[in-house]
Image 1 (cartoon, rainbow, N blue to C red):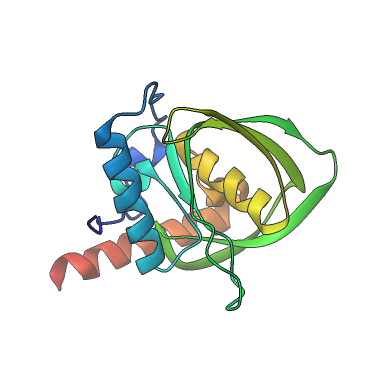
Image 2: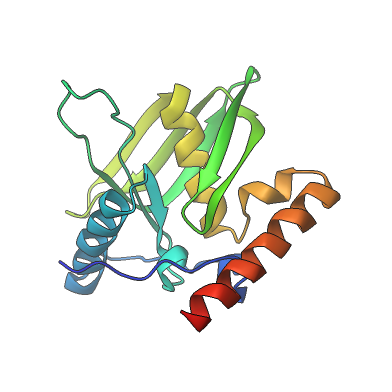
Length: 173
């Protein structure tokens, strides 16, 4: 396992649609392990492959925040939302590719997602609360969409300018 650098917006790879993985290879399993390590180290609750520069439909997440609860790392290969509730919820979202920027985003309160496991099996689960928000946010990454795309243009432009400045500062350091 190895930590991978996380791309910072704006980067064209973050706006690209990721390709289906298909069958799970050793390379995909290694990528998933690297992504989990990168996500936990960041620290974050979700990470999509495009955020580490790999345009494949793969995401990892773990929304367990309680200290007394064991972690629940999840790896979703080729995830798909197959059902969304009509009820909406609003969460203040952030993103490892848009550091230190947060905004309220409205999404379906519950979603059912199907995916392939690392063992190649078909999986399905209904998510609610933070898990629902996280899985939708990460699937958006696979479709080339960022949480700031849900914001008004002025707010989105302000955040983008801050990220351009951050990238310049990091390049100089």
